[in-house]
Image (cartoon, rainbow, N blue to C red):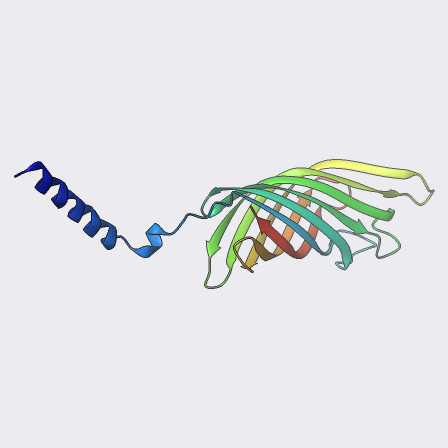
Length: 186
């Protein structure tokens, strides 16, 4: 067999192999590694007496890194205003800020991605006592929740999140929040 004939045979075999590979495998890989989201919503605590109300306004910012095709590691930074009722437990004009670090696992559904996440973080509850003095309490807590992301295009999506938080505060320990907003993949 001549060198020219072997080269031509190899080229034909390589061409046949390329044609046999499915088109999806040849598609360019999604290059987005990060997700940032801005969310708004409502929340409250079932432990608050008085002040049990789930209609308190909340906002949250998310930054996540995609570490595997269905796994994310990220940070949630949020604020929950607990002043919809005159008192939240012993506090007036109460609010809670938090920072969580955690992981999320997502499942691809037919037209959206659903996910479950768990995290740990720091929480700060503040407000004024009845005598007018400021009161602040800081504690460690954890979060568990579910998400749903509806992609608009490759970069943008609508993100919905429902979360529960357990925090080692003196009076209120359980918080629940529901958020919705926009996400951006880059």
